[in-house]
Amino acid sequence: MLKENLHQILFLCFAIGLPLWAMENNSFEQRGVHACSGECYEAWQQETGGVMEVAIAKAEAKAAASPEELGAAAYAGCIACHGAQGEGGIGPKLAGQSADDIYGKLLQYKNGETLGPQSALMWSQSAMLGDDDMKNIAAFVETLP
Image 1: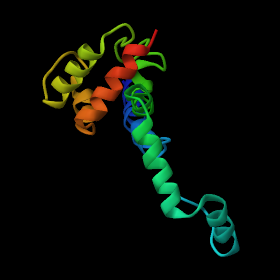
Image 2: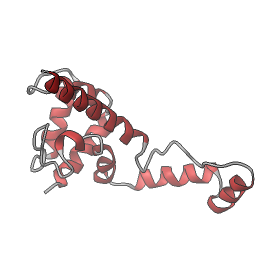
Image 3: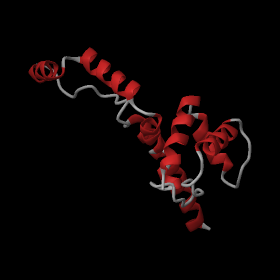
Image 4: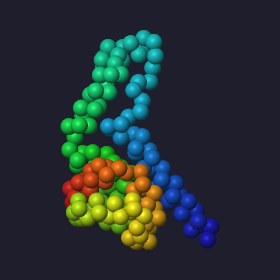
């Protein structure tokens, strides 16, 4: 019983913690701009053009990214349960499913519908996703082998 509870606690920490970490550390939405001040900051500013130039460059990169690229960044939060290649694990296999199927399921989870025994976990995960996020993740999943 204790071992089973420990596994459940570890799973929940990982399943919730990884998506939160991924959202904070993806290549399009990095929180930290620089990590220094004074001369170090001035050197960084000369090298990069400053905060505005960095923000503009990130916005341009995000705007130019394909749905699959944006979905790959967002999928980082899915890896813990569905595997890096969508092969499944704790969660079901996603690879081989169409973008329409994945988007439809994410939308159903977001609406609180039950699709399987782990629906409650997916309700909280999908609640953090906007419509574009779900479409991008679906586009990425469709590219998985």
